[in-house]
Amino acid sequence: MNIYENILNGGDLRSIGGSNKVVAVVGSREEFDGLFTLLFHSDRRIVMRAGDAIEKITITKAEYLQPHKAGILELCSIASDKELKWHLALIVSRLNLTKKELGIVWQTLTGWALDRKNSRVVRVNSLQGLYNLFEKNTPLERDLCLTIAAVIKENIPSITARVKKFRKLNNKI
Image (cartoon, rainbow, N blue to C red):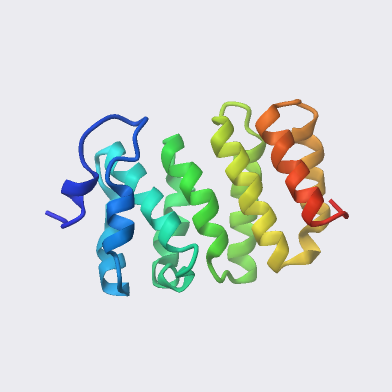
């Protein structure tokens, strides 16, 4: 059993459980690697909480993700649970991607952002992931603007608020 599994187990999907405890104890790449394996766990609650912890850890330690790039890209292509998608949308944008990988990720996140069947959190985080990728790859500005133009028409408060935030950061969007 993974040492983090007990900390992340239990409760329901509305709770982050012990993910903040895991964030506090993961202090090395090796420990992070053990946590990362839980993204493939069969229990949706553990996957969601592991995703939450990974997302928080990699805000300052994005380099921990790079050895797991293939796994993250695989998860992006097969993820169906909204709780995993909303974390992946932010995590994947922290990777160093090849041009081909960037195209695939961009297409995935754009699809998630535009899909009205996705939860609002997935859609907002997908937009944030796209914005994060755009910041590293400014030629994607036109594509980002097209996606924003499509979703802003829906007049969803959480999406509108995120777009306003982007526009404060970059007046070209």
